[in-house]
Length: 392
Image (cartoon, rainbow, N blue to C red; front, side, top):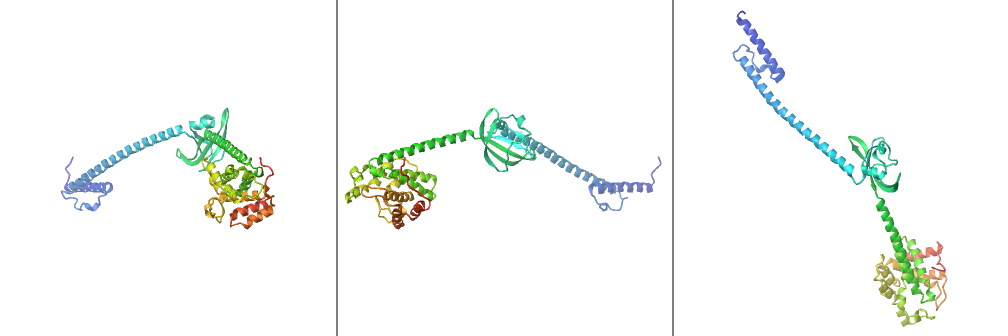
């Protein structure tokens, strides 16, 4: 091999420098003018190699840092994936073992998941239920009760709820089913027991009412008729069923205190004298004392105590005025007066209903509650109300 002449060495040096410059510019973003134009200087190649070495080291450090970051990200991703898998398993365990039946329907309305409780409630195995419809319409947020007929099993009452969900990454509709048969049967038994107790209570009250009236043939059936009219007035005034039941009991017992009034006074064929009337005026208090210990679900004892009170304070036994008198007592008061005046008494014959109503209307707002008087007037003049001739 021949010796390299100075001109050739310069060309080779320039060629090497150009290559290094291109490498630095392309891969390390080093601008061409970083290295001066004097490519033949003794330090040019060394400077370029120093820059290249430094850049390679810098890139190596960046690569190592990125590699560590990527490895950390991969580890975090794996942990997240495992956590997601655990969460999914936990969720499926909850769904599978939930006390409610759970069914999931796809967008076509076909079952794609049924848990064991739903299988038991519906009375069919999962294999028979999947890819079928539930057979009834349910919208998002709906909640209602249905009866489920089950082949070979007793019919049940179920509470169902529906809501839109995401299931395995897709839109779906979840239906929860709860067997409430036991609760509804228990509620019905309680209701029947309550109704039976209510009938027994009312029969007992009616028996007490009848026993009290046996002493006075002229007032036989009076409390029953007062109770009937009182309830009709309460219905006209749109009282609740519960309030009307209380008024019925109070009407049947409003004169129970008369059992302490001597027979000679109750059956006297003439008008009572002052002393006798004072004795009779005690009967609301006697009735209150009899009924107070009984735990009625209504203020029966108070209604009985107040049924002879009047708006202007002229009533008895406590001279109460308007605001202090129960509305139920105001109803019984009007019904009591209407019935008493329209029926025979030992000392006078019955008055016509026109006369009776006119008398009560004249005392409207003075002795008697206006709303009660008006309701009573409508019953007799517009709605054809009549007292029954006999009350059993």
